[in-house]
Amino acid sequence: MAKTLSQQVVVIVGASSGIGRATALEFARRGASVVVAARTVSALDSLVQEIASQGGLALAVPTDVADPEQVRALGERAEARFGRIDTWVNAAAVAVLGRVEDISDAEFDRVMRVNFLGQVHGVHVALPALRRAGGGVIIGISSVEGIRAVPLHGPYTASKWAVRALYDSLRMELAQEGSPIAVTTILPAAIDTPFFEHSRSKLGSMPKPPPPLYAPELVAEAIARAAEHPTREVPVGGAAVGFYVGQRVSPALTDALMSIRRLGKETMRSDRPDNGRDNVDEPMEGLGQVHGNYPGHILRHSVITSLLARTPRPGELLTSVVNRLHSTQAGDKSGGAQSSAVRTE
Image (cartoon, rainbow, N blue to C red):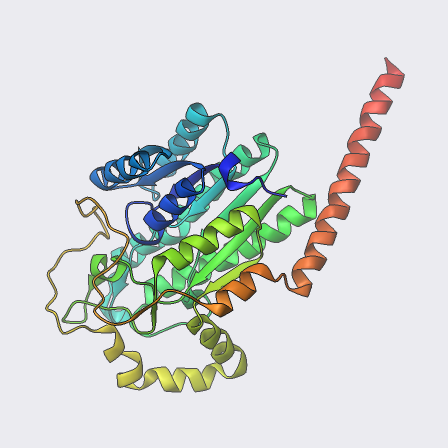
């Protein structure tokens, strides 16, 4: 069982804006000590000040997740300041929107280095830290695009499929060893954050998220719950269920529907001209913000998310049983080895 949030030290990577920033504020509001990481120093500083003004405790560590040495230094700073890490949240991501053939090799490489390898680097630092703490939770932010591909988002979609596979593999490996470390994958639908405004566009205009949009606080609440009550996967937003169903029932039919320009392409193009600014290679300076500038209706509740976040599926329960069996066997072997050592002395 994970610690209550008020007892936890939480590292949040990608905390300068959007989901990561909302998550840091949510954890701090619930009494956790938070370590916030991102590339934009000014945004991290404003976040720490906001948390401190509300009575919370936070440490900012500027970090580019594409650099494993910087991620390693982040973990060291967190443990040096607070003594341990209980939950690690991987939320950093960038995007380039356009047709696959219009996106360069270097742009594909950068998206994968941040979105996928950045989470790999986080896992490599989090695992030994969580073992030193006696257990904990790794939470990775994938996307509904980790379930179902969409047009004009090839690098991002590919990275989120890779992220989901990474955590599936890790989850099974930890169960095999009976580890007290849990792994939860978060699968948000379209969220009202500055993410699309920070993306690089090859669409001839500023990109926009396709409706319906959900509030980032909804994702932050799901992440905070997973830190106390981890489950395998948590889709956020009822629209996520449509991605699940479409991919399970008929991927080919979903391909056809999303190939219709009005459904697949036009929903991602805004009527604003592209300003040529993005955070793919360099951070965008500013104080950071949780919400984007979407002019339409934002959904702030999701019954589907509430139900799925609180209801473990049969397969999850079975995996937990396997984990406990392996943990017991490991404990028996350890105890036997210690007894043997005592007898031979």
